Image (cartoon, rainbow, N blue to C red; front, side, top):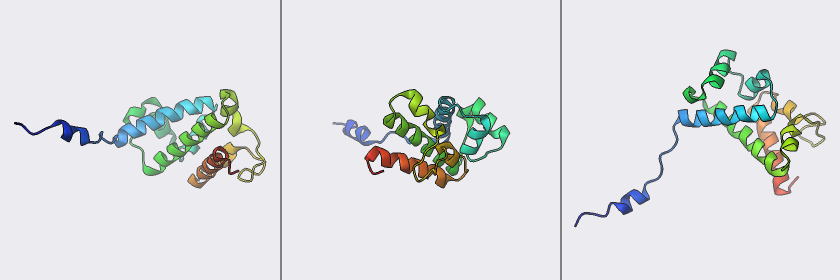
Amino acid sequence: MPPATASVSASRRPAEPSLTEMSAAGLRAFFRIAIDWDLSAEEQIILLGSPGRSTYFKWKQSPQTARLGRDTLERLSLLLGIYKALQILLPQPTSADTWIKRPNSAPPFGGRRALDRMLAGNVSDLVAVRQYLDAMRGGWA
């Protein structure tokens, strides 16, 4: 009797996505978010960690060929998390999509827009916005 192969294949995990697959998926999502948030090319470049303009346009033209570095992937993860948190907190798409451009008196923003904080250029600024929204979702803020 042959050994049971079903139990072996059932225990295998699906393959991890490749760096190119993660990069492409992250960029496609980011460029859709950029449309929803009405971001300029310059704002998008800063949020992506200030790659060269030619690199940015190459990513935009064909995200499936990009191989992003750790910093850019982290930025994309944070931006996707910010977008998702806003969709949960503000179920009206227009409210969720314009929130980042409205002045905010909460401590992380000091009367400025969340986008201004995010455009400071540091990953820590994206983390601060993400943490604020996560706290709002959890009722901690």
